[in-house]
Image (cartoon, rainbow, N blue to C red):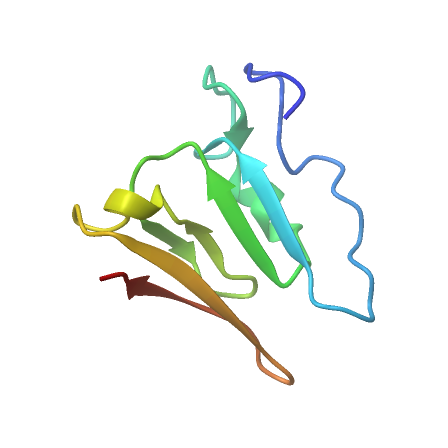
Length: 109
């Protein structure tokens, strides 16, 4: 993230993924509705719709959120220590040939 400000769009200009491997795109920002936004580092649904990578991991929101599953799974994983409902956990992403990325939240401890 070069600069956390309203003009920065984390997925603008994301290159096409290589065809011969699994791919994960990461971005720090807030998913907001398409249109003018005063938010810093906005991520618009239209930006996510253009992502053809296998999985998208987002940062900025301090809550576990399943943004979407299709066509590309997108998650805010949150901090490990209080990942979901105040419980520690992680997002485990399994990459299944022919099916794609399959993220799921897994409790720790």
